[in-house]
Length: 299
Image (cartoon, rainbow, N blue to C red; front, top):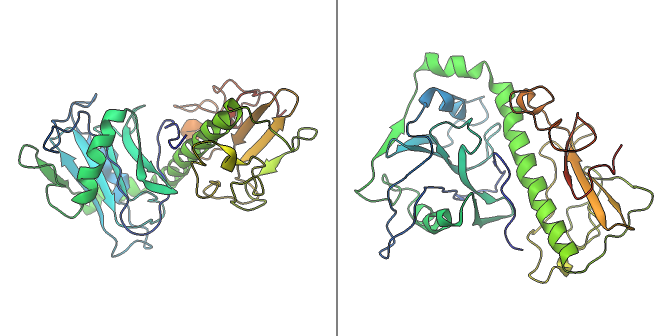
């Protein structure tokens, strides 16, 4: 499986240069031009995007722009990773906090492969990628493109919540990367492979070991055995990956089942938060985000 599952908000740390994320609703016509956008949210709430332009002093001189497309969706373009900004190009619906606010992104290790909520978005990926420096982003005269700007005062207000923004961005990366791992492991199992190295619920952590995806890295699953090839050039790790924040894997050889989990940072995703993920994921620990085929493996 070359494509991983998009989970919730997805924001990925990408390497240098431009890597494109596009998610316009609609498809290309036969001439390769983008069809009109039909997002779920019919207007742009610009105040919700001000956080995207926060400059913490580490990002000076870096392109960091927001564009309203057809006054329906927002394209966020940054030309290299810049904390807390970790994705180079993303395209959003008018409300970035909505459940499906992020329309499309790309895999960190394979930026040419888009990750979209619907396959119809993928056909637009190449248009934006080929025209990233054009004013119309390659969308043509049938679309309106407007650069979104903010006053100093508006950005100052937004800066007050920058820490939680950074946490939410990291959590979105965690959702995406763990979702990708889950998809890869499920495919590995579906092709008749057995999980090994499970021991007596041995814990494997992303902050211990390498990113090798052949079973010798931090994850003891040889993804090279997947018939279509590994979806990773290297295993993803937690965006912090220290003693407090890291990915965890545990498995059961007898049942050929596994669990992945991670400790989230954003208040909204914690137990009782406005978008609680940790206590609503079906697992047995309300304080971590769990996914896999057996969410009772970790006590």
